[in-house]
Image 1: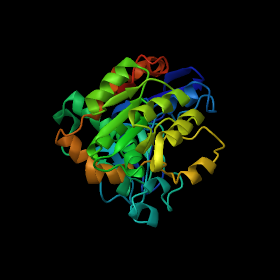
Image 2: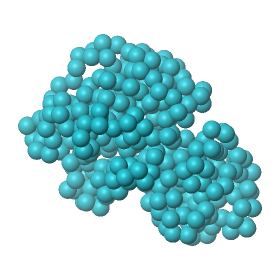
Image 3: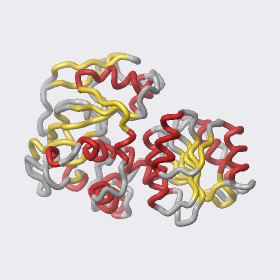
Image 4: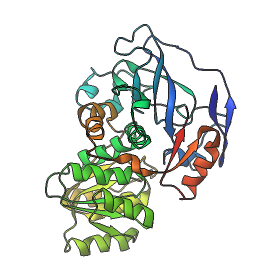
Length: 346
């Protein structure tokens, strides 16, 4: 089968490798139909995260058809159309019951990889895979794009809003204008926010944020951006802040943009090893967040909202590529020529 191989920073290639097989009773093999490149994939592509040369573990966002199931699988059969969340919870431990399957107590290897391929092995699939009614051919390409966001970025944006306790009437600041931040705008609107301030310097992302429900755009960064947020909020700051980047500057901006007693939903993968908690203490700031509860949110809220046409997160995909052109897909995001790259696999 075709698989994306990470060669070195700045280079991925398609190679022919063995199709994955069932290795554990709760495995499922998925024939990937559509996949994507995530902003977090760029950390390795840019050399900011260390990745082993010639590795096959690229990509963690996909939808597809169940090809084979392990002996322990009772909830799925070959032919089922599924969303493959990047988190793999068991569904019955304390963490999963509370809706935090990203920290599943029973599955330590509970994050996806290998999704940018014709087939992927999905471990611990009994509860975590999300079935979609019908078959891929029953849906438009626009709908398929939205399903792919439910494997990660839409659920992650929703997790940011939930972690920040966004509620009706709130003023929200979204730090980060990538796909997760833009989905955070959608999620904040779903939670009833009356004002949503997106921090963005890029016109295409600003336009999409406004379409999704943002009310204000702040192009400034750092302390200048915080000053603009304070100006827009009459010196008070936001009720809730969504941190969707993970850098030291983005976290600092998020902390400074909230009012005393604000909550920050932090979903950007941390890339700042140290954090001074003193300012947070004196402002009574709450910081929550982490890996998104993808299966929980998809099953409870998000899949239904997409099927009903209430939200359209697939619009974050602004360029499409065949799997054979995966290098171009990475480069388009790296160069900010695409908000998010969509991969047509089969």
